[in-house]
Length: 204
Ligand code: GRF
Image (cartoon, rainbow, N blue to C red):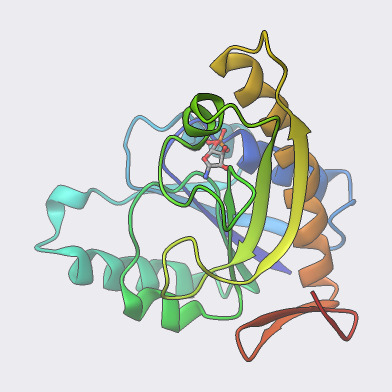
């Protein structure tokens, strides 16, 4: 099975998925390409270190979002992906892109969706005095951060926590649940039907 991962930054979730493929906890699958919109994304180094093709598509080289996303579609299709994973990809995707990969496009968002769509989720949870926070893996639909949730992990927020503490606690959980969901999908246990996530025949 072929996995393509889109990143913009550090790529710790990418690393977790590469590691899980190597350990065969994601069974019979490989990350075959990593695409980034940022030339300096550390995740591109992680890809190269793992012998995975690392591709930087420069936003400045394209006239607009549609042209950029069309180029991405072409690149990604060359790898015949079974699953396209957004892992800290920080650019809004065109509707055409989302439709093209609909049903095999997943994202991880660092909040307990539907709470805190958008940016700065950890800071917002901290500022709100939340005692509970977390992360969500979801199918991507044309509604930003709005597709059906597949799996969430909750973490506590303690009174003395800094933003770094919360970020680290959430990321630890991301590195567990993203490979898990990836494996479910590639084992064909998971799908999106009528805008709902379905696992082993059950609507989630
Ligand atoms: C993760 O926290 C993810 O939830 C969010 O962006 C972050 C990416 O981290 N979408 P990394 O690049 O995988 O380390």
